[in-house]
Length: 273
Image (cartoon, rainbow, N blue to C red; front, side):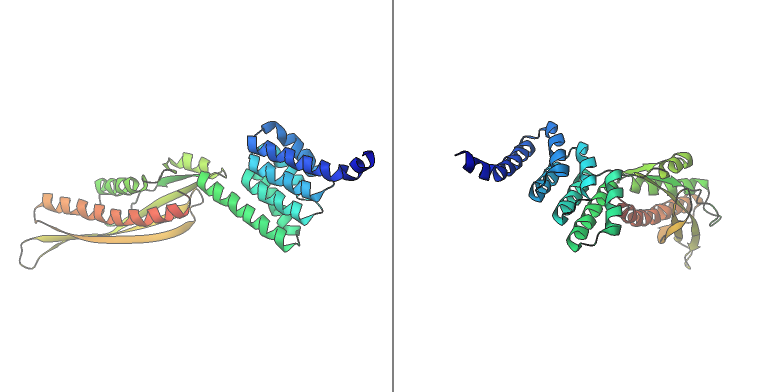
């Protein structure tokens, strides 16, 4: 009996270890992270190390990050691949840096594939978590008929469209610059001008038409490097009185701003807004 127990002792120990960590993951015992980390880094069986790496990812406890990063240097390909996969779940700057470093030296195709998936997951999470700061320029330098009141209307109309995005914040120049320095924040400048604003009378001398065109630029802030130009125009029927012309100009600016707002919404959604 004693001899039989000795021959079966090692497989039994392996199964007991795997069973223990499986139970730990199922009940969510945060205290098991230390045991899993130890198994990952010291157990002679690569199967146990793979299981430990898997379960550290399932526990979603960042306390396991250091052990998983060290496991990226494991001699076994499966252990390195599982460690990379779990680091993608835990996230964080140290995990991202370690994965990028391993990708530069890893030769195994399966491990490289898992690293790329993990890095993609981390990038997606960063995109979801970040806040976009937007600051507006003066929109000056365009058509003379576009006075300060119409430029204010243009800016407020664009802002109203962009307020549909939860992760977009309107900030002053200083706040946008400060936010741009953080990895989880990005800053943009929106500026442009009313390139054309004209009141055209009809040949019959009755109603008049107001036409306009607005050009908008989106640039990185504070570098002011331009990444997008877009424009929109409209034409609005109005009367010949000054009050009618003023209303037609306002309606034209709002209509054009509405079109531009849709374009900007699409752009900022692509930026994680």
